[in-house]
Amino acid sequence: MLPPNDRAYLEGKGYAFDEVVEGGMLCVVVRSYPLPNGYQPDVTDLLLRLPPGYPDVAPDMFWCNPPVKLISTGTYPQAADLMEQHLGRTWQRFSRHLAPGVWRSGTDHLDSYLSLIRRNLDQTAKGLT
Image 1: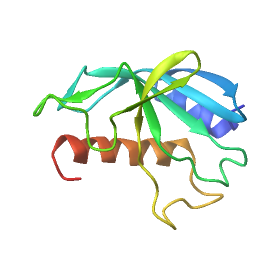
Image 2: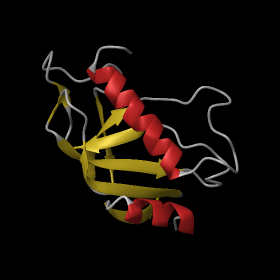
Image 3: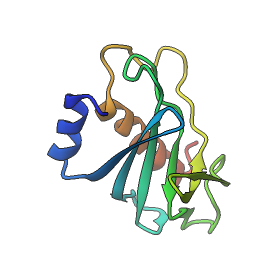
C-alpha cells in the first residue's frame, strides 16, 4: 500500500482516494480531482498507477475518468486520446513521461508527482505543450 507520507499528504490535502493493487501496480484513485480552468468537466477521478519499487521507481502517465476535453477546442488534449481498461472502468490515458533525472529516487513522492501532473494540466490548457 501507499507509504505513510503519501497517505498523510493526500489526507492533508483533503483528497478522497482509494488504493487497489491491479496487475502488480499500486493503483491510487483520487476521487473528484479538481481540474484547472480550461477543461470540461471541471472534476474527474484521477488514476495513478505506481510501479513496483515506487517511490524509488518513477511513476509514468496518469488517467482520467470521466474523460476530459479542452474547452478551447472541444478535443482531447494531445497524447490523451486513448482509452484503457483499469479497475473495471474505462480511463483516458494521458501519455506523459518524465524526462531522465526529473524523478529523484528517495526524495520524490506523490506530492511532487501530483505537482508535475498539475503543471502539465495547466500548461496543456493554456496551449503551452
